[in-house]
Image (cartoon, rainbow, N blue to C red; front, side):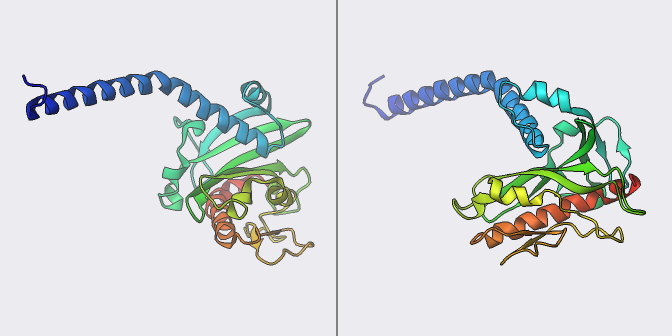
Length: 241
């Protein structure tokens, strides 16, 4: 076959593409277990961050075992669902379902002499997905009719592609710290969630935090994320009163 012929060029290109594609497939398959493990460790670190526990890749798994004492999947009626691993639930896919059909992951933790419940959240920012975890300290002396899981202990938020210096600031301490101590139920036991306020939250409010200056759309998306995710858990919260 002449090396300058069209047939040779076509055959040569086909062989090169097949060799490269095969090589990439082999590498991808070989790296897949490591990639899955990295995602698992990152998720455990995020859960620990919401519990205000510092961790790194080397100690995250040990700390996760130390603090997380139980995990389970709930339905919208607050019932535990058998056979579904809460750690493996894809919240992005669950949020596409109606609120009553979602599988809801929940993680129970113990830190010192206090009990906590960690809930994952997932939503949409300005340019892409946003997500996070919210931990609730179990209130030991809840007022009559109020759920014990009402007070936020800590949060962890992150994003894929929000604007640097604006919406991307949702993962910064200055934005996350004010969520601590806020409540998601009003004094009558009505679910009110958290209000992310543009222009400044009322310092006396138990339900308001400041929005990010210049990141209005991301702030609104984060509030919608909290509202739409936590509302699915309210029946379970109210069962624990």
